Every structure is written in C-alpha cells, then in structure tokens.
Image (cartoon, rainbow, N blue to C red; front, side):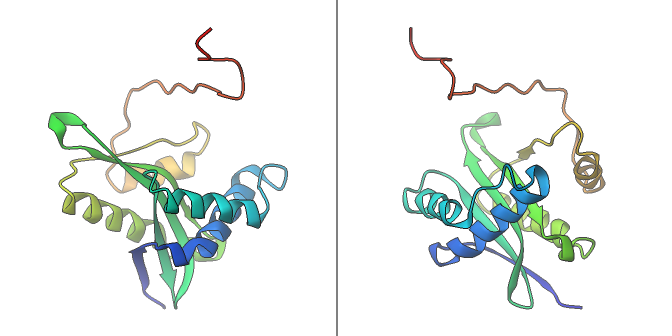
Amino acid sequence: MSETVVRLATFEDASDIAALIRALDLHYGGPEVAQPLEPTQTMVERSMREQEGTRYALACRSGRPVGLACFAVLRPGFKLSGLLFIKELFVEGEARGQAVGGVLMRWLADHARAQGLTRIDLTTDGTNTGAQAFYERLGAERMNKVFYRFNLSTDVLTGD
C-alpha cells in the first residue's frame, strides 16, 4: 500500500486543488452545485496570488493528489495564540478508508503547532454524521456553539 504524503500546496498545484474542490462539490452538492473546473481553478489561483489567508494542504498517494484541506490561520485567539480553522477537508472516494483523512489532520496539527497555534476549529453539517464520528475518533471535542451566516447576495449589512 502506498504511503500518504501531505504538503503545503504551491501555486503550481492550483489545477490539482481545483479538481479536488470540484470533486468535493460534486460529492456534497451534486452537479447542480459544482462549478466547472475553469472558474474553480481561477478562484484557487486568485486566493493564492492575493494571499488572502486561504491555504491548501494536499495529500498525495503514489504522487497523485487524493485529499485536500482548505484552512486559514486566525488570530488573535485565546491568549493571543491563534488557531487554525479548517474550512474543507476532503478525500476522494477511491482513497477513503486508507487513513488519508487522519494523515491530513495530523499534518494540520503539526503545522499549527509549528506556528505556535493552540487549537484547530472546524464545523460540519449537522447531518454529516460520518465526518462528526471521524473527528470525534481523532479526539475532537464537540462544542456547544451557534453558527451564523450572513448571505451577502441579499441586502443584509448594506449600511442602510
């Protein structure tokens, strides 16, 4: 069995990242939600070029990308220590059950610790019990928080 190698993605990885993001969108939202590959890659390149805070980690097996973490470092955090927020964690279907997700999570934890960060935060959909069980198996603590969203495509927060 091939070893999983995780690394911080570079601009040269934008097409691989875009393909994994599209696979993620197809998996969770279906073809009516997933954007075509070209605008997805444009978004990835823009996020990397503008250094907006989005970072990507790629998990590869036999040199082929099979998993992805989209994350950001947020500060100040508890006692100014900051945190790593995971927006997306995804493993392609054929690589599931091969510990890729666990390797990605351990890499993220090591990456965070190396930057002096003291925690990792993430959310899951309430119905995604598989992801919840995965995170809890790794030792994550379920928090009693309320999640809010402002839909900026409507007239919320316009200053009127």
